[in-house]
Image (cartoon, rainbow, N blue to C red; front, top):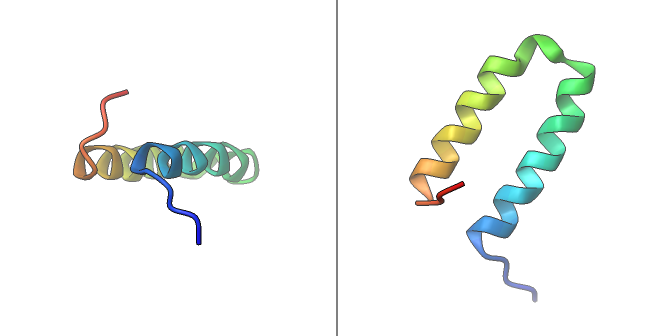
Length: 46
């Protein structure tokens, strides 16, 4: 079983969010808000 750090998971979220936004650009603000919530909750500093 592989263990991933929060920053690695967050990077995957960024990649898949970009792909999602290519199809649904109208959700941009909501996606950015959710990514910000995750980043703050996990204590990441980007």
